[in-house]
Length: 304
Image (cartoon, rainbow, N blue to C red; front, side, top):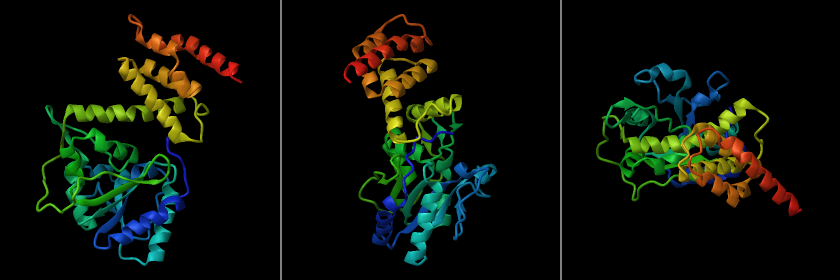
């Protein structure tokens, strides 16, 4: 599987995270780890007790072997905390599976409060949807994809939520301010609109395309600047939406074009003319892009 995540030494963010933890000593701090990325492999050897979100009492208990879990970061000496978080960061390095939360609640209560958010239902047909918010690719999109009400519901037990982003550094997610602990927490399942679900599918498209291209040809994608590669594919997907291109093969072809030609290849007038053409059959964009690609390469060569 191809992860469009830059692999950076956790030393880049470790000091800032530990300072944040020390600055909020009254909060309960946890690492949230998506265990699905270790499923079938070697999990992190945590020196503290882990609290799986898909536990024995969860409706998702059958997924326990791949469950996200909380690792408490409190109650240990500073040196021990630094060593554990550093080792955890190294274990997760280059994979979208690590975030950190500060909560009013202890681990057992936070796990319980999050149960209604793990499998929200889609309004209208009550279809359950697995919301994998421990996957940082999903998590990063949620503040914009979810309604403010849904985002507030998910983050209600938290004072802070930060994650290791695509550039391999820690980024803090926006939470509604001021923060105060709710008197009560809802117990019914989180409900998502079809619009919210569509936004999440839309945001996930670039990663799906990159994974498809990697499986089709493992040597086709670079191993460096993966965050930049993701930005290029995002730009191609945006361009496809702007021109109402819905055929998956055409979207993949446009993303491949972007990866070959770079940002410049998405700006040439010939491409915009092609995308604006009416009457083009779904699935034929890839072949038509070859002529545009030749123009981009020729123009690039002429500048050398």
